[in-house]
Length: 464
Image (cartoon, rainbow, N blue to C red; front, top):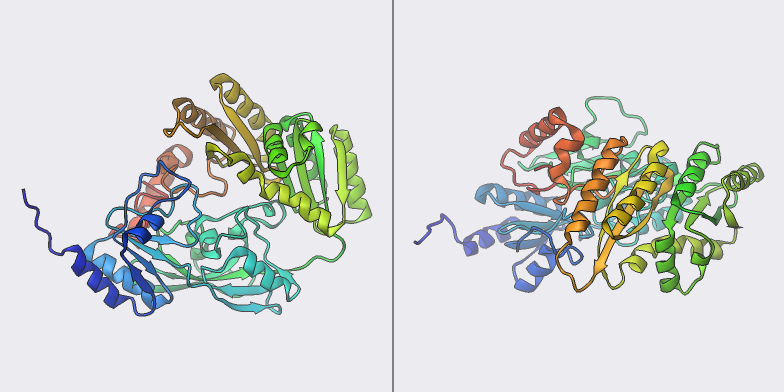
């Protein structure tokens, strides 16, 4: 049977090209394949896009959206394409809208303690530019060197400094956003306090490209703290003991800017990766940092570590040695992932429930015969259990899926969330009702329908 359509693909592409005045439209198979599928998510339920648009201006974005409305096509916004939850993969017949080339730092104002950037600016590049003026950008995701500010905002990225400085949402002052109908919104502003109207700025933070396209971000900058930074490591019998120590440090008044936990399996993988010998010390490693140390803070920290039976505590104020310790945490993922299939999860717990969750993860691993590496941002209760299985087994094993369900249910039972900082995407959107409940789930769909009535913006992501 012949199926007749109003337009063929060539007509749609020709129209799209007329609507993109500054950027580039690509339709070759190599580009579409590379940008439609996450390289580390082989089970992604995605498809090959119709076109890839490298936008360079607001006009390009409005033109893509005009095309999408005319032909009822999905629009998938990409930035640096580092999502771990199938948040920016292609869909069949979609337009992938990349903001990667919109990568200018428009302003750094020391006087106003802020920066204005386009979405494609790399997190680490913004921080480096701010530091040249005696300021810094606090959000510090593990992907800092490769992730863009636009993606950080769209997913409300967290990171290693969240324990002191908050997640991305706590550092965003204003946004420019293009709605599905092409209208531009200017939200928030340059002030540190804002109380007028509904807080629509925060509505778009973490919206994962489902409500609008972010084109400009105003973020807070902070002055580089005075005094000497201090970093260190300490070892504990197991992750549960470490979690109890972290809870005590968190409320001690020391105000660390980093409290990172790695279990023994992870440290063994790091030893292999880094050619070190840390795993011989004990069952879990704590990596910590204080931005501006004082004798009083050091004394309190040392006492707490002693009280909670920490062993082989190492402290340093030497910048080179600090960088080496902190690099251990950044190298965790390549060390664990090497030569294995994997799923890294992202749950966040109330601080008082972190230790029970650590115990439960080990129970699940033993019960189901799995190898689970556990690490995470212990200072803010964000835990990243990573399940691995042999590389030659391409399908996700049944016991891996069972483990995920058990850990998610336990997280919710303990009052936590099953997405602390990696967003929802397509991998977790089926859990919306269970975590949020009927009323909030329904309200989210009402908001989506109001702002995107044709459901063209990143469909199948964030909410079902």
